[in-house]
Image (cartoon, rainbow, N blue to C red):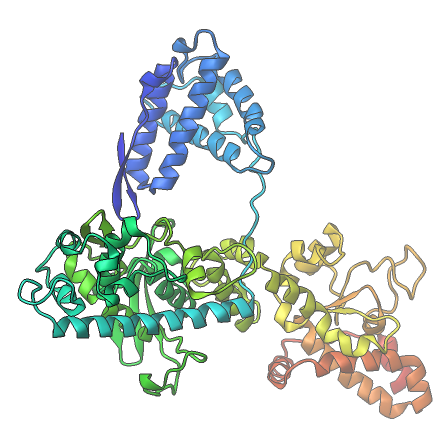
Length: 609
């Protein structure tokens, strides 16, 4: 039995070896599971996966072996039984399910862990088997796409509207409470008196329920209106509890209200939902122009101290804030969150590691505690319905995290190192870079630079724009655009560099016989379909342009157009797509002697002699 953390609550999980005939095997796996959870601090959901895996394999061993009681991790008979279990495991799940792979991998991890201890025996063949690749595939997990721009704008606008409505509701509620007095001295059916008593803890919710008239028909109109549904009716059986809850929500933000702050913080910081909901008052440092937060990412076991600066020059007072153009500064959002949760946090001083605290009504007992994002009827999907926002695709808050990553990738010009600033670059490339927006952009940046002159050129090179520089360094990405593996690797490693471009196949030149090495490179590369021009070729292209300008001055215009016209048009089109800053940097490399253009002797003899 182990105690695991489940969103701030301690949960007990257990494996009972007595539930299985192979009790010795179950006990060994359970021991490893207990130590593994204790050593790694696994979350409740991750630990539960191991419990499920042990249950599946032990139940399968009971059914597969007539003498399962003799099975243990030291048994030579266990390996073939385990292999058969892994192969047949997917049959019990839907197509593409990831559960079989997770179960098989979990069992192997526990076995390998036991084998790593010198004093614990594991059958040698079983140990080798467990360290190999699972016989069960991992299934296919559908990547969540980012929110569309319109959906994200609707989310943020609704979140700010929700925050403003919450602030107004709380301000009015506490103002009414200040006007009241103890219901014993006032009136148990008077809203200000009831709010006064609840806000000061002078009365209990159960007392309000006991003092209400037996039927809602005898209630004052103002109380009946507080619990009316949209159709004007009330639920008689839960009327008392509904009224108490309406009084509570006038004083404190509810579980549903806090979704708006999570949306705004994820957008403003770009961090995951678990990070923006897991910092307390001591983790906040307000700066003259921003805020510094200590963010904890449980899954990666990482603690970060991040400063979020306000937009430069944005000194407008908060009173001018509008719903259609809200502030996106993290400091403004955090200040509001601190203010609206102040009274709730006073009711549960033991919770110090999060600002996301809220009241709950358990029967007629008012309790305060951590925010529960998955509470029944108060999930993110429920919040979307309450604010009237409809989005395309699954309503998962993780898509907002991906949206911020996409924006960062666009702003950084596609540089993974800049966009993946809070996790591994491999994680970004394997997860966040799979969104629709970046897929479309990655295709467009290849063709943007050549769109202008491709209409004029019968044959021409493929040009990779500076925005897609990462593609030129990744052979797998290059293969997505029609290159063979050997060609892509040659370009990445520089083996196919012809001077002003790379050549995907110098043995298949349109200017030479098939099978012969191209005899006109680099003079005809700018009008060759095999050429791939990378951003790093800019200095050589500028030198080639200077050479052609000298040639153009020497030759008759008709002769120049006949011999060099297509290369000249294509080359100018490529250079026009590059910024002046890029050209200045390339010129500096040329002047420093770091780059030169090697042309065949005939290029000079033909015109200079």
